[in-house]
Image (cartoon, rainbow, N blue to C red; front, side, top):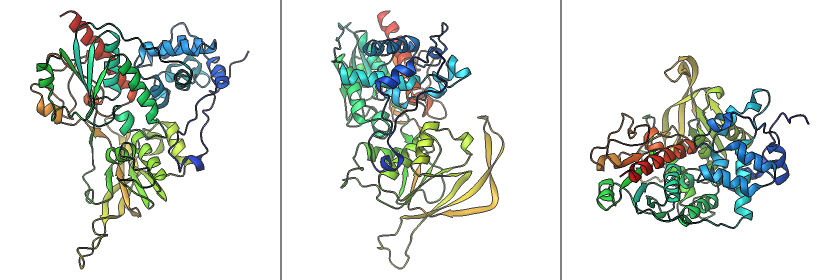
Length: 469
């Protein structure tokens, strides 16, 4: 039988419908589609796809079980390496990781590994009874700071080995960036909540509303009897451009905008924490967070949404799938453009005018690509005399985040680099004995799966250190 050359498309909501609701855009493979897609796998002997997975899932093994219709067996294979299979199947950039190594992709489109992982996880959640066996305790205690992907992965891997793990989360809901940073239409909160409940069934304790560095410090955790601490606090400090007008009303960091939508329910018909209804929005940036913010703004009622990015579409760092979804939903891309100033309303004759201090527009300049910079991408250069106005009343800055300095400032002897990232060795060990770190707290903003990989590395190192103690 000849190989099907293209991966099976992901069924989705129609663009005009989904642009005004927060239901999941991608609907998932059916059983029939999953079986057909799995049949495309060549079951390579050298398994290059596994090498492209940061958590080393045995991809040929789980796809082989999908071929046989043993979806629960496939789930068990994935779960051996990943604590968050339903999450990874939705948000991991498989196209640049496992799928980029797929042998079939040399001649045709690679196998839809991520889509199959999602199918398997969703099948398990819908059809299989949870039978998590809590392992026997080994007598060691470990604290995990942050309940994002790195923290949950580290906690899950250690709990499976019998460690008594307590996770401390600053917000009122566990999940970290998975719940406050990724919109419902890409990653439903119920999916994350179920993954968290699975970890709890393994014995992981989760304490919310605890800010490490304020409520407790890392030093106090160690003094309280924890033998190791893993810091997976993410990169929650938003970056701004430093241009005039960023302090105006109606200017948000993408972090604030998405958090208020996701956790404070700004998407409800009569929200207690309103963000916006109607108007025009400019989202500055070109990554996945920018796409999330732009598509969220559209669903919150914006009449017009622009992505303002200083390079071309070829350099846009967001996943192609997310860009295509945004375009189909009607978001306009203003490429090779850069903001210079955000303008605000001011009535000098009436200081009490309710319109004072609100955004009225953004002054931009057109760009062209020059010589490559240190990242290898061509540097954007302003075109003299090309300034123009963008008529918007909301601006969202999505130009990256940095690690919050709170933990560093309250932890003695913890070394960080010039960007604020915690310095670690290849095992995730920091400059403090017994303190490990991983994910965005180390690297700055990166992918969910890379953070999970760091959590696995640290869990392995912690286990080796404590069992040898």
